[in-house]
Structure formats: structure tokens, C-alpha cells
Image (tube, rainbow, N blue to C red; front, side):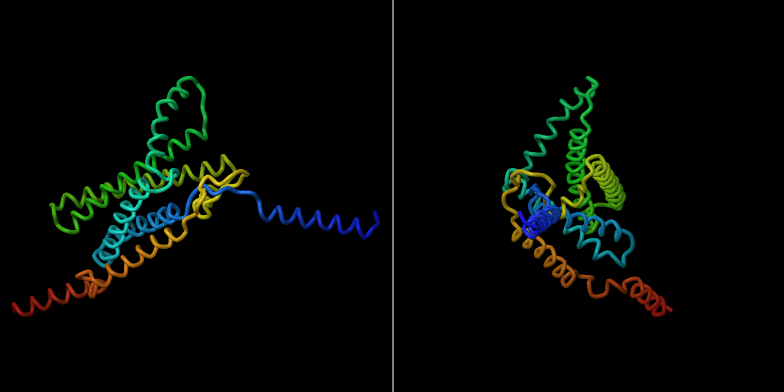
Length: 251
């Protein structure tokens, strides 16, 4: 082999190595609709919690609360009609492993990865169930279906949901450190490093786009049609002005 051939071979090997470094093998484990649901729910809950205090942001808070309700309905339907990987029965199967996990702990055998997966499932199921009651209590308060005591219930449920969200984030961070892998990135890309077939065969991006479009359309509709939408931003000033007008008329 001459020098030119050797150089070309070395160059080809170097290019192949670089290409392999840029395109590490990965598998799809989460489809697009599930990822869209996750981030829309995170955004809606965070926004609703931030805007919970004060009349100025009342419409935003209510709109995001309705969004949470709609997303919960979507997740239930997706869990009943979607592919096997997203079925609600998968969560039920994991939760049935609680007894076996406790027995391994009693026997002195600790599987940290199995324990983390189990705790994550418990946190997710508890959070979604809690959001059902949080949204229901918020709707009751907004429609004035109950007394003022429901406002306190709504606040307590919201704080409890925030605590579970914090636990979820801590477990994601801990799992990322233990596995030396960014687990949060998986919920963005839907893929995890490793060789093998995709656990989720179809990404179903159009359904994710449809979910996002429905959420955005709901926000626009709610903002345009809410009874107090027009003057909500200036509500405190308008209320004060109206009170002064009544006071002057009485004089």
C-alpha cells in the first residue's frame, strides 16, 4: 500500500469516527403527544400557581386552570385509546410492584433504579389525581358554587401539588446523576441513548401538533369571550374609580 492510499484510509477512518461521535445510537421511548402533554401541563400548572394571587391575573389563572382540565381529559383518553406504552394499565402494573419492592427492602436487597422508577410512577399518579381535585375546587370557587372555605381547600391542594412537582424534579435530578444521563432531555427528544429497536414505533407528531393547536385556540377563545376580559387588566383601578363615583353621588 502506498502512502496516498494509507492517508486516504486514515482519513476515512477519522471521518467515520467523527460521524459516529455525532450520531450516537438511541431509541425512541416517548412519543410526541405524551411529551407535548407533559410540557403543556408543566407550563399550565406553573402559570396557574404564579397567577393564583390577585384579581389582576384572574383571567390568566382561570384560563390555565381550564387548560389543566382539558389536558387531564386528553391524558385519560390517550391512556385508554393510545398505544400500549402510554396506557393507564402500564401505571397500574408498575404500582402493583410496590409489594414486591417492599419485600426486597425487608430482605436487605436494594435496587435503586427500580425504586426510583416506582417512586416516579407514584409521584406522577398522585400528581395527576391531585390536579383533578385542584382543578375541580378551582372551578367551584370561580363559579361560586360553594362558600369561601373552598378557596382554602383550593390553596392547600395547589400547594400539595407543588410539593409533589418538587419531589418529581428532585428524583429526575437524582436519577440523572446516578445514571449519568440527562433524563429531562429524554422528555424533550423522546429518545434515550442505547442500541436496539424503538420501544415506541411511531412518533405521532401530528397529534402532538393538534394538541398544541387546541390549547392555543382555547386560550384565544377564553381571552376573547370571558366576561371580564376587556377590563380585567385595569380592574383594581376601575373598581376604585367606581367606588369613588358612588361615594360622590351619595354626598
